[in-house]
Image 1 (tube, rainbow, N blue to C red):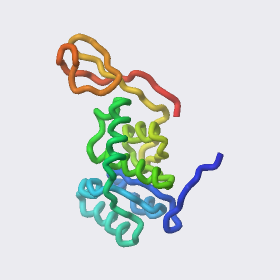
Image 2: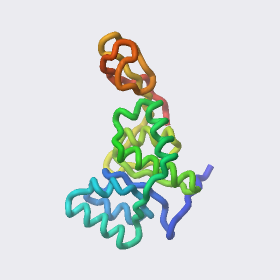
Image 3: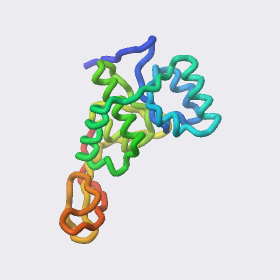
Length: 179
């Protein structure tokens, strides 16, 4: 079965995480796509060299900076809590995934470009294609669980502390799934 790929301005649609902008060859690689990202990703790009790459993409209209709709962010949060990935995701990560989901729901077939394994793990659950730039990427999806460090109770969704005894929870692998 052939994948549907919507092209914008003649290029494939890609959502870009901060890690993709920080690769030395990023500009060369990202110019092959019509890129989208969130404002907080741009704020995380600090060095002049990497910011210059972002400016080139913006000037050539190969990059759009988009605010994410709340409903998509809420949906990503819900899935991240359910899978246990939430413990390793920043607010920026959640927004990037929500943007990919938003574009997907708008009829685009976005490719998430990130070297972050947790983003790749959650993207695979949301049925969003992903690709790394430097890193090879995940080969299997991880499902997490949380174990209380005091009483040993196990939870399959993220909690900050044990509901039985109030102690901290430690994240551990509950299982793997093939992609």
